[in-house]
Image 1: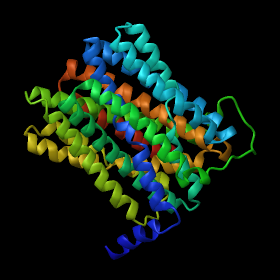
Image 2: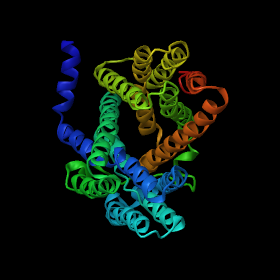
Image 3: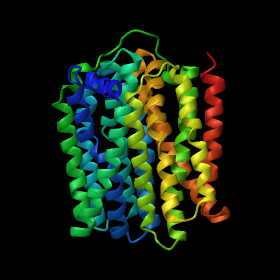
Image 4: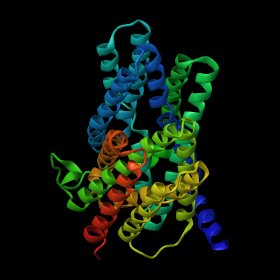
Length: 394
């Protein structure tokens, strides 16, 4: 334990590291607030979960499409121009969603505003991940940084929805959407006036291709694994609420997800403090493989308390897996595609989550409420085996 604590003590004593981690936490608060606040507001204003879901889906699809374009621009011009443009357009487009809904402008107008908001979503999360590549040269330091980063994202996804839910309960959905928009502006200011931008470097060397980092075969394998991993995460996102609904206690769905996130946060903190000698590819194969058994265990338990314990264990490999994936993206991406590689990573993450939600819902309808957990176990087993055979051969 003394050595474990010393690892973190020395890490946070490095110049600007503690400040940058705090900036990462504060500047990414919108990721846990905007999507939920938008969905809840649109459900009330449009009068339909289907329409609200369609607008939210438009927002996330546009975000997935726009992210790589932003990444390529950032790699060529630096982050400041992109931050300046998105910092103005994104909150204005979110405000346009609010205004169009309030004035009954119709679904097409609301969806168009959501598409603009997604295309011009501020790339702070991607920039934060790219920052760790620029800030640290040793892979061990990067692994520790990405582990802490994964824990902070879990905190964002815990605090953000809690703030939105509390605001909705106290003042309604419109009152929750307005602060979410304001938080996006505050996030930009926090990031822009922090030491973060000092660490970004533009790399001018290297031949450029239309497909950018997608021309790197090993990086493509990481992205394929990312899609599979996040598809499994999507299965969990729909599986826990589905099981809770089957128990006639829908509120338990949020509890199961929170417990799952807690397991992820704790394991991420532990993983970051370990000194591991195995190559990061083998660590990646191990963390994905460790998810298979707890995912399967969901099939065999039915009591809510036992199910919550299994959810906690299932979350224990999530943050370490994301940390390993981020280290691999940072290492395998050519330096002149540093940011674009992480935007493509985000695109595969968003696409995988969407696929998991869609297929997981279908599995519940056709094969039962526990089918998504079996599906997730099967996908994670394939991912682990693929990583072991194709990435971790050395």
